Length: 253
Image 1 (spheres, rainbow, N blue to C red):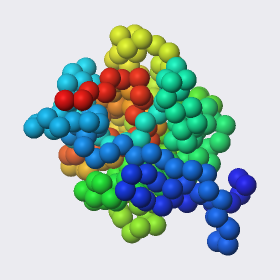
Image 2: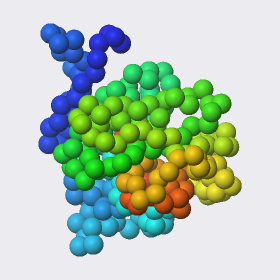
Image 3: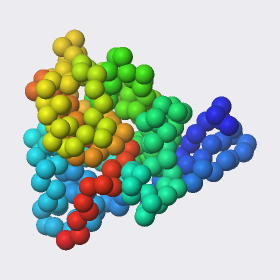
């Protein structure tokens, strides 16, 4: 059924995911939403502290000076966690397939779900000027999937709904190394060696930007990309990801 378009419908605690040809509807399941009571900076759930921020200090250090706020659809359960948590979680499955470049079509429901999340929970983002993906290297066989595919689909949703934000490849990945499986310290070292650069042909002065990626783990890559955008004049930077990796601690105050 790969030729039948995906669609999504918003509910208060989840998003329905299905395919439809206009006559028939083929349900896939739901994306469970992270509930709104979250950290005002990194999106960590279960926050009831007065300042609306959790104590994920490392993640905050990476994001604090560059990202105004982070949003995500739900959790991305890593393989070691799935054994004990949701083995067949639909959001995790779609993100995983997109990351593996098996089915780029899954950018469609994920991007539509991102737009619904913005529309219903973060309407300020509808006034964004640009959508910028965390880039892949030009020689990466996955260069047109993952964050790039998600940003393109989100951009299509903005256009279809009469919003001005368009996808702008304002960043480049210039070191073709995968950080998958690296320790946090090693990943930070590699990223800080100059993995990404700003495209000087792009003007982002005073622009409101949505920075898109597939998952958020420790904020190293998102923080570095956001810092490049901030250094080159971005006014506001919101991070939007499909899933938050469940491997980071969840605090309940």
